[in-house]
Image (cartoon, rainbow, N blue to C red; front, top):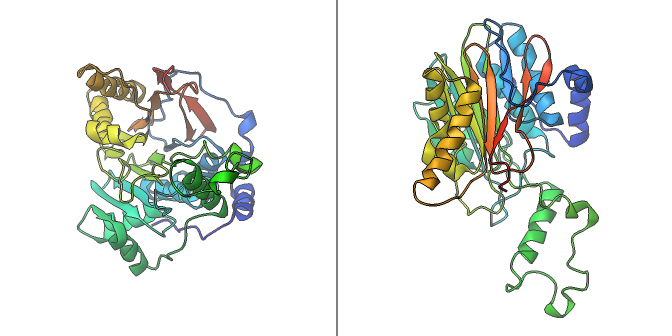
Length: 362
């Protein structure tokens, strides 16, 4: 099992990125794939991808790549990459649920052993993907949820801690005070609207950005074995106990060692109802490329709503990789342009642009 990173603050994280992430530092000079182009064929060579395309995503693959490059297992590499994202306090801690509690979900699947593990609504543990791996490898179960998941993690030496950062706490407190003008949170009524209830400059731009914090990390190693992880903080302000697609095998993640792997981010409820990641892998089994299979999943979900006379377009992003190392991604319901993923292979660290279907919807 890959070594778990210790707790770091943002300054420490950046120092680690400088020391270990030479690939991330050189991103400006790396080639980028064209929108809609198919991922490269890296048959016989290891490849790892993540749905994250920011600095943290690049650093995650920079730290995971040496495992694959040295002949290590895909499962170890995806865990390392997921951990890097999970412990970054500015990237994954996420906003809490309705009650101000951060509840995390994660799943992992190892194609080499056809084994899977997950945790749902786990609290107080920074690296839920590593706990999911323990469920997979050290129990005969697939999923453990809630307080029992936290106690399970603690039995293996994980430290329970408050996952709220000062910034996320202030954002939540602001949301609690402002989301319903009819309740009793916020300034006294006679002072409302005079500026005393306005967010600070630091929060004004950040409040909207943090809605969910899901990431997928998928890899094929030099032996041709495939593994994947999906990990998330879920929707901000969600109902306590809500579990999304991320810890559900076949929904937020699926791996078939003879075919490939797929993962999802976005509106988990639609991913659960459609078993989207399983669907993508089965489409690849039928001969579709990862890019085509991701686009098929988008169309499949939209068609489900059309069938009931509804033009609703949810917001999902799918990423996939096949056994040969080809990759793809597709999204819906976003006006932010083509969806992207970060990929690391023997030649470079690259950002690949997939296909945005129904981009006019938000």
